[in-house]
Picture 1 (cartoon, rainbow, N blue to C red):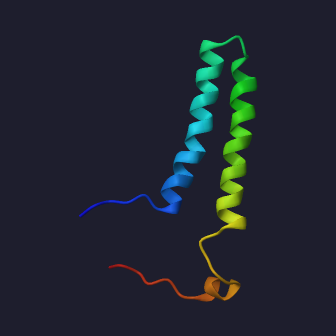
Picture 2: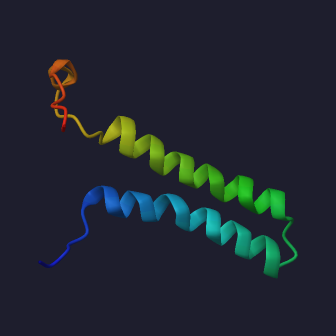
Length: 72
């Protein structure tokens, strides 16, 4: 079975990458650590906002009323 990257796999990568870049910038440049983490953390928050509210996992509002099947 070949695994392919799905949309939300890419979202997870796009959330953690700016934070790691912020840590790298704060560690290896003269940019202050809090500034770099907060600045690139805002990028991560923007990606999460887009993935949850703009291009969310539901097609219509009616999808939110469907019952969830429990796996027992």
